Image 1: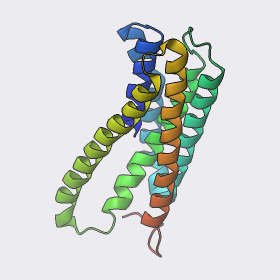
Image 2: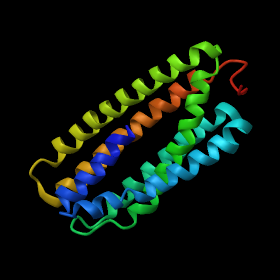
Image 3: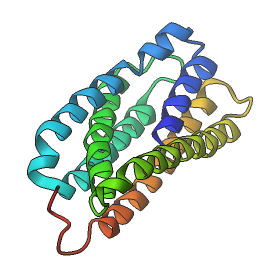
Image 4: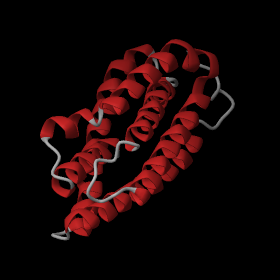
Length: 189
C-alpha cells in the first residue's frame, strides 16, 4: 500500500502540477527519513522493549500521517506545490518504520530456527506482492479519478487514493490485532 501511495504522490506532482522529476522524487525524502529513523528506533529499542505492541502503534502513526496528508490536499491550491505535505509524509514514514520491524519479529516469533530462512523469503515475497497490489489498486484509483481533468481533478484523485489507503490501514490494524493475539504475544525471542 505504501508503495502505491508514493507512486500516487509522484503522479499527482508530475501530471497534476507539472513538477519536474527531481522535485517530485525529493518530495518523498521526508518519508524516507522518517522511515529510516523509526526503523532504527523500533529495531534497537521499541520492539525489544514493547514487542508486538509496536505494530499497531506504527499503523496508528501511519494513519495519522495519511489523514494529515488528506487535510493538506483538501486545502491545497491545485496549481501550487503542496509544501505542507512534507511533514505529513514524514509522519507516514515514521509509521511505516515503526510497523515493519515489529511485523517481521511477530511473524517469525513462533518459528523454529531451521524455519526462519524460508519464512524470511516468504515474507519478502508477500511484501513484494503487497507492494505490487498497492501500486495497482491506488494507482488505478488515482488515474481513474484524475482522468484528463487537469490540476483540480488530480488533487481530488490523490485524496481518493489516500482515503483508500486509510481504509487499507484500518484493515491492517484489525489484522495486526488478530496476528498478535494470544498469551505469548508480548514476548520477543
